[in-house]
Image 1: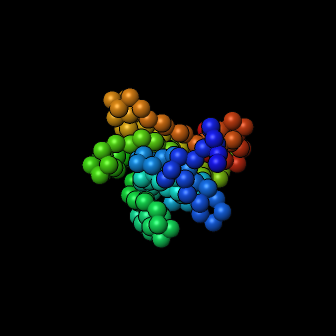
Image 2: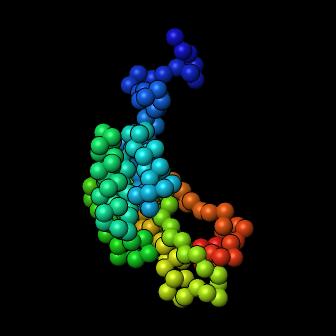
Image 3: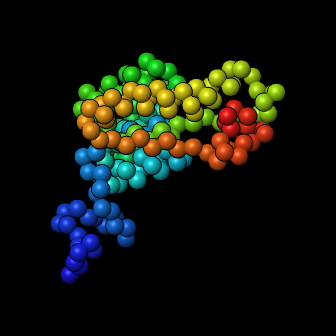
Length: 178
């Protein structure tokens, strides 16, 4: 039998298709913005596989519903909400819905982003505002909304994902690199 740090607490591990899951996030409430596709979806799925209560915020209703359906089909707990993180009222409504249902947010993963490919002098102001509204303002709005409850609880984690484009810059993606 395994001993010490390699010991497996009863009921805390499970194996699916040869992969061992630890259930580290059991009963934790995780909000993943942009969780309908790409890295956001992979993040939501990883937390759900570790038994977290995952809530995906997506701007497009169909993407939010699809995330919820896919998690459910895998036998995992997941919820999809239509939330545009660039709009304060949407964020307030989304966080309120999570709080009413679960009473808390333990982990926030800011993964929502939009890309607009154009050089700075070819970028329309509306495109600039849309990209920065989601990629920058969205992180501010939702973090501002969940931090007070995390501070009150004395615990919580905020993870902000970013792109290497923010460090190196991309001449053909001025707004995205800002």
